[in-house]
Length: 228
Image 1 (tube, rainbow, N blue to C red):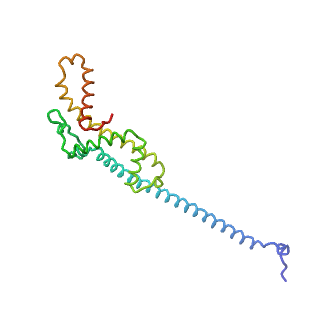
Image 2 (image 1 turned 135 degrees about the vertical axis):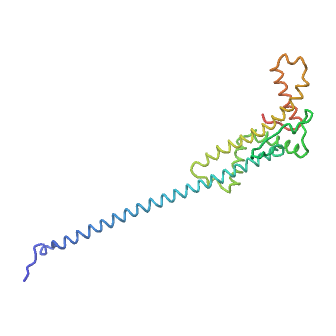
Image 3 (image 1 turned 120 degrees about the vertical axis):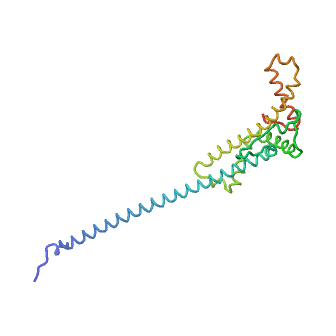
């Protein structure tokens, strides 16, 4: 009759059983470690995918906003009557030839162009007199053209959009003011010819007076205020 080992009598494990349990525990630790590595890799993959999707959405929104900004700027150029006077060159640049609108020292515009430019001068003067309201109007128009809402703007896009609106609105203002000043400069030629001979004694004063007169003359001709 085989006697039990002291470990069996005390409720312990034999050496063979202890080795098997240790091996199973080690395998379980390896499995848990591999599972942890897999979970970490999975969460990293999900996070990277989500970040990539967000970046793609940001890029898509920005492209939509850029197109909408161009469309909004064009809408305002039409509103200010610029398209009635400006033409597009062969290379796509927008140009304005003031000489074609001056005859015998006077403003000469077709009826439709004159009406558009007069209404545009009034609209531009009113819009740029209240820049916060103009900025808000641009923002709403851009978002509408882009089919986006304020909630769709991600990351730094609200600040970026504000900067773009400010730049584009200023570019349109300069275009409008430039056209007005170019016409006034052409009208200046007639006033210079009509200036008294003794006025040359003070060229600076003469230049300032003639500049004021040409701007006033253009404003009166258009029956609309000019941009300062």
